[in-house]
Amino acid sequence: MGEIFPPEEVLEYNLWKEPLEDEGIRVFVAVHENEVVGATEYRYYKNWNIAMTDFTIISRPGLGIGHYLAQNRLKDLKNLAREKGKVLSGMFAEIYDPYRVKNHEFGRVEVMNPYVRREVLSHLGYKRLDLNYVHPSWENNGQPVSGLDLCFMPTDGSQEEISASLTADFLSVYYSVLSNKPQEWLDMIEKLKGKDKVALLPL
Image (cartoon, rainbow, N blue to C red; front, side):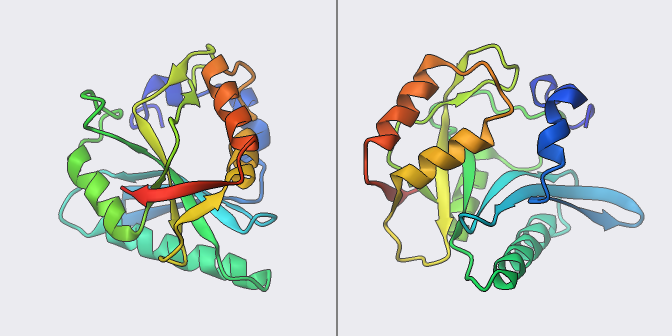
């Protein structure tokens, strides 16, 4: 993790202890010739029947790793939902907007151009939520992080909106590990709680 992730993404273990014990967290790797060449980590929230993609890392091009991880991730999530007698509702993801942020370095991994990555995720079915999105810095310093869109990939591709209260509840749980929330994030959550739906727009 120290080689792949930016320093602000690698927190002390005591900060990650409780989240890592969450049975909903799923971590899988792609192995090629006895070498890990890709990884994905995501979470399934059974109470809401949704998922969140935390990250997908591809360290070697030309092997179809992204497709392999995405297809098997979706298959796994559908199976988890099926075990609960449900059909997976969809999956959240935070996606950088390269048109707003020019620095896209992520550790030592530079396999995919960020403009291309965004289009690939659009092809997979992700749609951006119609809100000015910020998230708390993983350095837990109370600073807001912008330049990303909160996106959702609905299982029903015709879905054009998502519950605002579900979004607020999900984000509150997802960022519960960070105690120092910026005011901008708190304001965003309050606005979501005051709405019924949030539109899903083309990515």
